[in-house]
Length: 442
Image (cartoon, rainbow, N blue to C red):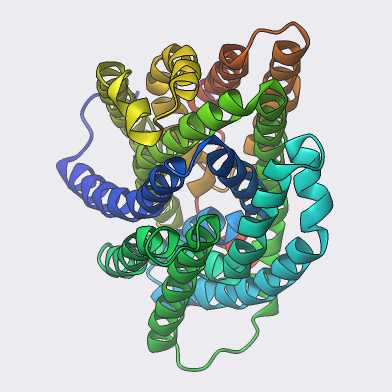
């Protein structure tokens, strides 16, 4: 029987280095968004709500590229673990080509359907839908850059490059974080200034990752076998992401129909949730790389040991976030809005936000383990069941029975709980720990 209580020191050191690098990279983007949210929040509840609705649709558009990040990490890590770095980098260059193609198509589609989709989310035509459309039509131009950043992060994590992703993402987001308040206030662009700053971050980041990939591989030829493999993984991850988006779009639409204060508070809570979720995800990203490399080298025992090790780290990080968020229950909402009504609604959702952090830490960690192992079919199923069968019904019930914003966040807590049960059971069975690189060529 494997002693999971004593992971080897070398694995722990590598995990912490990868997690620290991922932590910085993941923190950079939501940090910019949080700064941007705070900047826009002081324009008033309507611009803040419009940012929330427009940002939700932008996330929906960008979800087509989710596999370029997580899927590429696991695939590149297997080649890296097998001692074939060139094949790992090939995964990255192929993912970058896909990023450019998909990004242009997604941006064009976003421009074409922006009006009706935003009116649907906002509950009809009106000032909020109009403001959200203004922001979105600018911000969607950055989608090709978003996807290039995802692809670049994916292959670099796979080869356990912990430095370059940090430099690139920090440079891009620092420039935009500085530009956002200037564009919004002194230059008088208002909500549109936020969108311009957003696009700037994505373009700079995308170009820097392209440069890094070009330096590793001078000749980029279409690798159709690699592309087919990535698209097969992408299909499952896209369906998984569709479950997430169905749930969060429903939550945004329900909050918008509850009132301006509710949707503004939901935006604050959602941005903070995404911030903490991505930071907790740093251990998951480390797990993707380490589990993929272990399985690529034929060491299933090490992969299983890593799974439980990263779950413990995720739990500890979630508990730490709960303590910090509980301590900031009054101060944090005040930092984002001066509206007493919005602050009150934020306080109503806060107990759910605080309470779900430890479970979320474990869920995100095991998410990374199973993605690194290529067990994406199971992840698709458990996410869709939890989203469509748990989160969405509770959220709609909150609107029907007037449970308020707390009901929406109770749905999120139940969503995390359902995924936790499924993932613990799957990880314990160990069937996901399949060794070798044969699946990479499929």
